[in-house]
Length: 210
Ligand SMILES: Cc1cc2nc3c(=O)[nH]c(=O)nc-3n(C[C@H](O)[C@H](O)[C@H](O)COP(=O)(O)O)c2cc1C
Image 1 (spheres, rainbow, N blue to C red):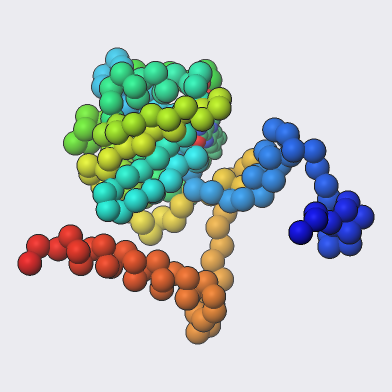
Image 2: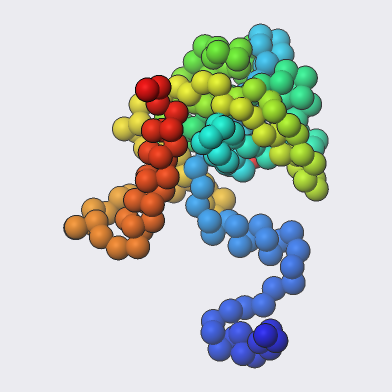
């Protein structure tokens, strides 16, 4: 089917943009995400970075992905250490997000004391007060333009205080999440969540020892 002309698209409320970094950045700024701090290393070798390009990829086997810029300090350190932890930040951890997104941030003991959550099973440092932390052993690294995709096998999951709610990143800032109760909780969203839950419990049942 031929593409609609620019005038036709305008009628539908679209504003055409040249495909480029600015347009993609602007479009994606409209997509709210959670925020994580990804960590690796030990003591003097501690390295941390704020990241929202993270993805739970597979439940069977358990695989998790983080996308890290090729020039980021964390990139080299994950390759050297072969593991990482993804700390899911809580609503009151905007300070940690800002700290570990700064090129001037410290590595080593100073970063470690900002995290304050001890070391996980892999040896990666954890951020105290996070909602949860997911530890991975690096399985493969895939080049992806100016980033690398680090696919890890999940080896530990730590639950924190989920009642605090998530830190959210949207249009370049950290808005407060306000939940409005939906009477009856019906509709397509609930249906799609049910579908996801069904798949998840199928995997859980498959793995349960008989
Ligand atoms: C909310 C937020 C999310 C980010 N997500 C990522 C990400 O997923 N991957 C990445 O490489 N950089 C991401 N960044 C940018 C890095 O945290 C930042 O550029 C950092 O300084 C890079 O490390 P470097 O200083 O060692 O180069 C994000 C920044 C913010 C504020």
